[in-house]
Image 1 (spheres, rainbow, N blue to C red):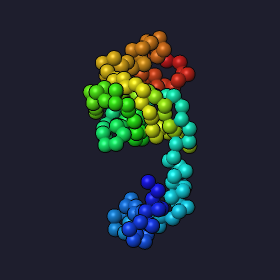
Image 2: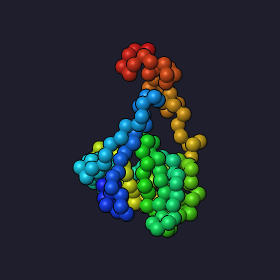
Image 3: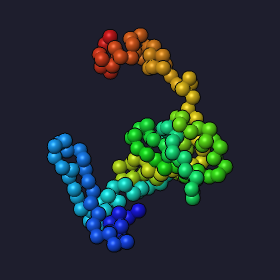
Length: 160
């Protein structure tokens, strides 16, 4: 939605953003939302490019009104990614609800490379029991038989 244009509808004369992260005894800060501010926000969050890719995170927020979609909270950036799904993947999405998944398809990313939207082609549940437990469990020679925590504490290139 273009927030700056909300002011022109139904007699709305102003749109103010209120921030409440100041000191408890101070009133919240207010900022008028101008056309320029709205354009700046749009520039930041609007997808810049689309390419094949995957998103890994927890599948949540399924919505079937209009275009069928769900939301994945990306594990890399912690951001909400809208995932449009074809009707043929509805059952897989419902079965994976509230579980970790890898979603593959065409990923739209913003100017900073953060995923914002994906046209889903495949949903793969992540089974926790199949994940590795630690670096040491993958290759004991890598850490010199030290625990992962001890290895990291000593530094990557230090001698044990």
